[in-house]
Each structure stands twice: as C-alpha cells, then as structure tokens.
Image 1 (tube, rainbow, N blue to C red):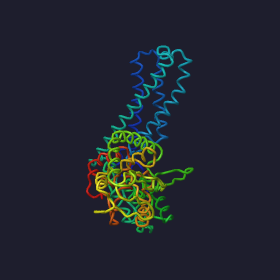
Image 2: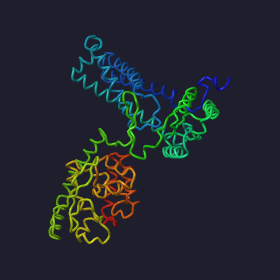
Image 3: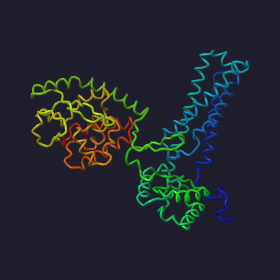
Image 4: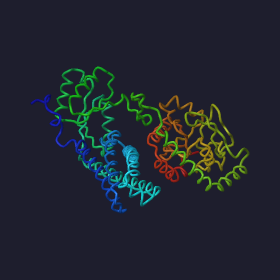
Length: 476
C-alpha cells in the first residue's frame, strides 16, 4: 500500500495528535460525569425522594455536550485565549440549562413523583436552589477545564504534545511567524521547515510537498503571502487529500498595525485591520476605570491643586489654567487643561516644543513640568470623557499634523482616548522630541499599548508612572 492509498488513521506522526479525538472524547466524558455526579450529590444532600435532580442533570449533561459541539467547546484551544474558551463554556452552559429547565419544569409540575423538590422547597426556594446548583456545576466545569488547560500548557512548554509546523511563504513572512511561534512555547508549535511559494509553482514541487504531508512530517501548514489564486487552489486541493491542517495567513502581519479582529458579513470573513481592541465591553470597562480612579485621585489632590493654583497666580501674570486644543479619539478636537507653566499660552499652527533652558518656562512652571503636576487638571478631562487616565499622550495639533506626514501609522494612536500617562511615557519616551526617532519610538509604544490593552496593563502603567515619570529629568 503506497501513501496515496493509506487510510487517514495510518498517516501522521505517532503520538502527534493528543487533543483530537482522544482528548476531545475525554473532555466529553468528564463533562458528562461532573454534571451527572452533581445531580446525584444534590439529591442525596437535600434528601429528595424524587429522581428529578438526577433526570435534570442527565438532560443538562447531554445538552451541554450537544450544544458544546455547536460552540466548538471540544475543538483544540491550543492557540486560543483563556477568555475565549471560558466564554464558549459559559455560553454552552447557559443555553443547555435554559433548554433543560424548559423541558423539565412542566414535567415536575404535572408528574407527582417528580415534584418532591417543589413540595419541600416551594416555588421560590426551588428556583433559588436550582440556580445555586447550576452555578456550582458551571464553576466545577470551568475549574477542571482551566486546570486541564494549565496542564497542557505546562506539557507543551516542556516539549510534550508539540505539533510540527511547515511554513510556506516569503523568507520575511516565515521568519516573522516563526519568531511569533517561538515566543509562545505553550502553544506547542515546532517549525520543522519552510518553503518558498515560488518553489511550489511547478507540479513536481507540489507533489513533493504532498508526499511529505502524507509521510507525516508536519501536522500544520501555514500558507502566507501568496496572491496567485490558481496556485493556492492547487495546493489546497492537494492538501485536502492529506491529514494536514492548513491555515491561510494574510499577506501582511496586521498585528504590526492594531490588533486585528475577525468579522463575518453574511458568512464572508473580513479582517478589521485598524480597529481598536477597546470595543464593546472593553470600552465600558475602561470608562468605568477612568471614572472610579479619576474621582478618587481628584479627591486626594484637590488641596494640592488649590495650592498650586495660588502659587501660579502669585508667581507670574496670566491665567492659572492653560487650555490647548489637541486631537482626541478618532481625531476629534478636544480642549486639554493644564496648569500654566509658561509666560505664554500658545496654540495654533505653530507651537515650538519646550526645550532645555526654555525662557518661556517660569521657575515654578519648571518644577510643575518636571514632576508632571501641571497635568493634574486633565483629570477633569477624564471625568468629562475627553481623555483617559492611561493612553497615548495627546499632542498639540501643530505637532500632530507635522508627524503624521513623517511617521507611518501615526494616526492609529487616535483610535482610543488620549491619556494623562501612557506606555511610551513610563518607558522613557516623553519630553522633547528633537529627533525623529524619539517620536517614532513613542508611536511604537502607543500602538503596542492599543494592541495589548487590559485593565491590568493600565494598572501597571499607573504604578510605574509614580516611579518613572514624576521625577524624570528629560522634561523641560
């Protein structure tokens, strides 16, 4: 029997596939066992003569496995986030519970032998008991799944349960993707080779690739960067006759812009290239964070702000608060508030940056700028929604218009609200940008922040601000 005639179960590396189908079957059995066992325990714990808790648990368990197939609960989560897996499990559990309740509740109300829980607990008590039991079962499922995920991640980090991967594309694409895979060892990807798309243009090149696939040299193929539709179609047709899983990667790595998002338009996939991660619940979470922290911080600094205002008024003529129009989210103009630190209040098409020994800066203003105390009024910008506590620093309009022409992707930093402090600032990229590379580094860190935003990330930046920004020496 040659490779073309070999059945699928004889193809591939020995022991290469731990997750599916063996692990998938194991997960289904564990899910069934956990849910049914919980029903048995509940019946014994509360002394019910009725078998209703067990019947409900059996129905819920069966529905959980069935619905879980639709929500991909039992596919490999190797390269997915924990949040995505937890979300799929919760959605599956809620759907299965609702269906089970709709089916079992009428039976419990009409069949006397099943109605014991209702007789003992009453209607409200039965509902509360059912909700408590359901929540407990869901927590048990999540704990076991998270534990299994942690075990698999540890195994893969130690070199167990790895998947051999072949990369097809230009050398630049292959190198970048190989680096990304190496940076996440818990995914368990081993890059075993690479092929240039041009080498597969010939029929002999494609046949050689198919032979390697049937021989089990690799389990996954990542095809990158080819715009030759005929070649891609030919490769996919050939690989469909092998046990190899094939993935198409876009022509460029959109991660270098802003975190990509996958959408579906009537079943047609679309990649959001320059959308922000702060959409939906993420935006609401960040706004809640801003309101809570902003209110607390303003309460703490109210008296110091009053003293600073008096010192500014007595130290030099002019307003206490300096207002300057800058660009906010989506490039919309906002009026940013600061304590005045100069003898002038410049705004418009030409605003010279402050530099060492700048004569415009007052003596007290120099202290405020060095300690970033001049930024304190911006917490009022935060409360009214113009700014966030953490985000890319807003630049004067003149500076933004200047740098957007020199730095690719500069305007992407406006996809979220600007911040009082940011990832660039706590990494030392603040103050005067007298050389272009300084602003380029600032933008690099701003985009990294947007791609990787989380509440924990924000708190890290706030804590680092205290130590790395307040007493910096490079701000004039």
